[in-house]
Length: 419
Image 1: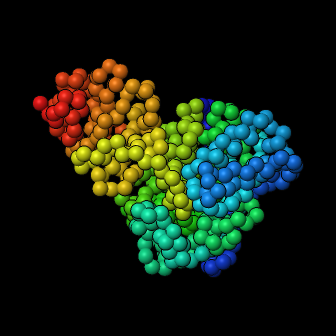
Image 2 (image 1 turned 90 degrees about the horizontal axis):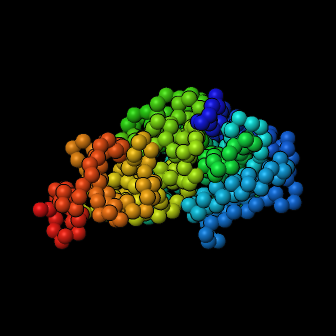
């Protein structure tokens, strides 16, 4: 199952709940969370110095206690540093004032990792929806498309993990219970460990499906507009991440390794750390789509959005290191993400001299204008409707004038828009 250069994440598989769950009854934990807990128990506590506390930028943010087992404490320092660095990234992105306790194991070979949340309880769908909507950040429309009423896809009860119960005060926000666990193989390359850790640590705080009964993750896993997939099987039919009832496809979900992960060939690109398989090209940071997934789970997330331009019907937004072609009146990140060669474009990818100037929607997708500030030359990309670059042209300061009207701006700086 694990081959180089692509290596599989062992994802969490949700177990089927007891028939007819009632509010407050406990969730059956995923099989691979049991495996991670067993690995931690077999190794034993890490002893003095084995609990590392990671916090956000302010005292009002997320606090994570990383509990390293004996094997993890005996591992090279680079292992604990990589796990801690990934957790620092998560704490920098999530601003909720809760404390989560995660067990970390270091064992086995095969370049993989596995884990998940350690427990939770069933809560009525109407209560969960109300908590999501009422606790959303101002202007966050993520939860607006969730169905009203007492059921979702015919289900009235929702599996809510400890981390999410803490968000809404259903249990103590600073409780000492174990919220999740993760185990990492000893042969994961240190240069790729942060990406693997971002993947598994977010599984441990609730980025998992559940099964025939939904958890919050399942609210956004669509097979078609209006139809969500409720299955915890490791193999799954085609499904995708959507925040508007299944109309817009933000990412595709895995089908062969882990249905809570993204499909490597999906619209989100092949380098996302939440993908099913990782490689030397996997990003070692959270992407804008990853942040949207965490936001959809109920966490309050900092997106760090910059509007590059908004002069026509389409605006160019930068969220973190990624670029989105959004409706000018819409929220950042609601449009397609800019991609090149099947992977998302990352800030600085083509060198510091290349700067994005703007974007506009066309009949077949989008056009995107770039400028090389060192040479004064320009490039115009044509992308499909999913943001993938399909063709391009090199332009001079004179020839770029022909594009200025469609971009609604003075691209070459001569004081005029158009010839």
